[in-house]
Length: 259
Image (tube, rainbow, N blue to C red):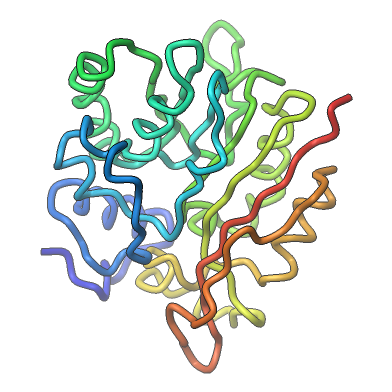
């Protein structure tokens, strides 16, 4: 079983890769926070996918029939497979993850879920969520401009290094169509995280020390041009308190102008 202390002696990226790679094979109970999902939507999803999902909210509740959905940091694939049922055969779901173990787990479930729901509308791409504009040998971006109706993520944005946040946000804005939406479940904090905590790979990979400040998270999406930016969900009690800093789960939603 992977320790709740996480890997030691690794930098942030390596710590995330190792911790979530191990968590793809054996469930780690201390990654992010427990969340309840509609049990009817879980029935068609293989149990190992459900058991190895790690999140802090349910952003899938903001997905609609016919949507093209982009799931950032798709992990085991649970959120993507829930979305597949909501969007229906006319919709599409794209998951992006950089962890090979999680990708292997989610991809192994593709034919199972497709058979059970009667159609195949999900794909999982390998890549960094902050680099959705990375191009292949033919010059095509991992995710094309203005190709997505809703971007969702579940306790993953806080794993991106702060130096890459602007690129991450710019790519979220780039891939969305006019009128596009975001539903981002994540961990936020009530005041700045000291550098020493940010540099702790155990706290970083545990969805703690990479957290956005609560107001800054809202402000950053407003600055991208999103309207009606708000916390649709916000835990009253902190999930964790570290050195007096409160960390809590939220789900941020917002919508782009239609034109």
